[in-house]
Length: 143
Image: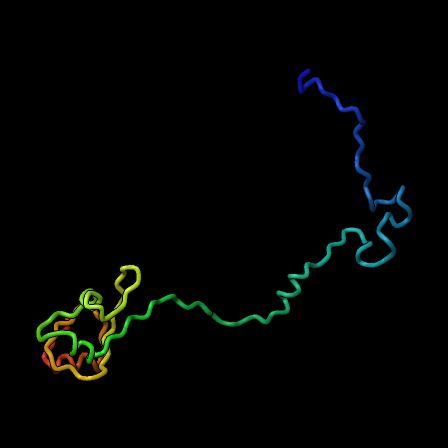
C-alpha cells in the first residue's frame, strides 16, 4: 500500500457557519442587541485608545549623538611636560593623563585652568580662547 492509495474512513464535514441565520435560533448564537451582536463588528483595540490618550510632544526633538571631548587643564600640562615638548592626544594617552576606552583616542580640549610657564607645541587638540592666549603668552605654539 502506498500514500496515493489511502482513503479516509469518515466523510468530510464542513464546519457550521454561525451568525447568518438558520439552525442556530433567532440570534444565531450572538445574543441579543449590542455592539457584539451586530454584523461586521470590529472591536476597537485597547492599545490604540491608550496611545491616543497620551499627549503629543510638539517640536523637533532629535539630538545628535556627539561625544564630548576629554578635558585637560593647563596646570596638568605644566606639571607633566618639559619645555619644548609636543602635546597631542596620543602623547596624553601614553602618559596616562587621560583614560581611554577600547584603544580609541577621543577628542581632547584644553581649558585655561591654572597657569602655563613652559613653551609647548600643541597639535590635534581643541583649545579654548583663554587657554590659547595663555599658551601664546608663555611662548608656545598651536598647530
